[in-house]
Amino acid sequence: MTLSIKKKLSDNLDLQPLRMAIEEETGLILSHKKDREILSRIGTDIEKYESLSSFIETFLRNKKIAEKTIDKLTIGESYFFRNHPHFSALREFIIPSLIKKNKESKHLKIWSAGCSSGEEPYSLAIMIDNYFPQLKDWKIEIHATDINTAFLKKARKGQYTSWSFRGVENSIIEKYFTRIHNNLFELNSDIKKVVTFSTINLSKLPLLPVNEHKDSDLILCRNVLIYFAIPMATQICQSFSEHLNDDSFLILGHSESFPKINNMKTVYSHATYYYQKTVEKQQPNFETSRISLVPGIGQNASVSSLTPNILKNFSSKKADEKKNKISQIINKATDPEVKESDKDTVYNEVYNLTIDGHFETAMNMIDDMKKQSVHPDYRLFFLSALIFDQKNNIEETLKNLKQSIFINKNFIIGHYYQAVVYERRDEKILAQRELKNSSKLLNDLPGTTILPWGGGITAARLLEIVTERQKELEFVNNG
Ligand SMILES: C[S@@+](CC[C@H](N)C(=O)[O-])C[C@H]1O[C@@H](n2cnc3c(N)ncnc32)[C@H](O)[C@@H]1O
Image 1: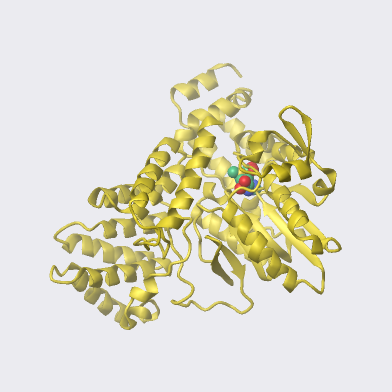
Image 2 (image 1 turned 30 degrees about the horizontal axis):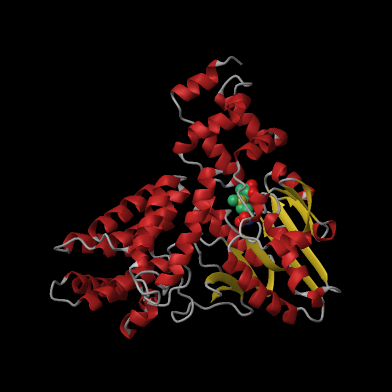
């Protein structure tokens, strides 16, 4: 192959067929904006083939080429004890509950899925060693998996620079690492041997359950599914639930969507959200199972309290009754005489329908309300954004979010949500801008304020999340 393919591609850049093949193979969604970066990472490999399509064909058929390509394209940013609220919840609630649950078997099985170069599973091993001496005679298994074989190789080696220790106490570094030279530290071998590493492609998990991970007590899959399409991410989470024992836990990254997972309830503690597998099949329950559809901010505490009884079972009523209610609702929402609080009730009902997956009905209601409203209402655009996001239409999600913020510049959840969407599209500068806007508005509010459309989240908690996100983005930009 001549030099021309790389040149041709970079002049008239459209790697859509390759991006589709990558999504097929890994679940990772790469946007058009990533084309130049993809080319800079694997352009030289593509050049060895006659055409882009012959490269794609080989990528899809040849395991070695696929592995080499994926190793070059996956992002492995990680560090020890990343996201403190997760580790507080693990130390003070999750691990103690598992100890109680497994006191007879004296066995703990943990899976770190998408472990990158090992910082996450090793943090767990360190935490257990340091804070749970009573587990010395237990069988502790920590299995760590990733799709990227180069990351796994680095993980097995267990050597890290100070970059991986942001915010880690010196006493932990001194106790568990040996300085090899200036800025290189090696993890002590007794901790290394607690963790085993292997390759697992999570996008294949819903089709191919992995027996060795069955009966896990805890699964962490943090900052991985953010790069996946929502339906695939939801299927993977469902599959995680099938790999867990009853009463066991699943932790996702803090800015990831919290899909509804059968047999799993969301738990809020230590200023963070996670899932716990429930023993009996979960019935939809308006009081306890509401979750926020805005990624990363968890359970919805406000919807049920704002929804009047007459509407509570709305989504389970028959279709003709539904139609009737819909027109009542729309009349109510578009009547200029109606109080703001009544409108909120109506919008909350649309939100409930969205949570329950009735996207078409919810969208029809929104469209009718948009047509009939005298003044555009930011909440209608926000609700449209949520539905488009659930349907994985990121362009329309963003368009509607922008519109909702245009109408209401002080809509904090809108700004935050926009930052999350920009981050998913890998537009870090725009994400940072929206985080900054959120932070400015949050700083003007008392910390205890419950934010509208934030699923019960307080201003103080969202500020913590925003600040942490800002730090991470700053790091990625500088890194
Ligand atoms: C940003 S890192 C997260 C590391 C760690 N969980 C954390 O939160 O610090 C994302 C990891 O997901 C892995 N990954 C991406 N697609 C994957 C897939 N289809 N199957 C398994 N791992 C995948 C990447 O290789 C990368 O190591």
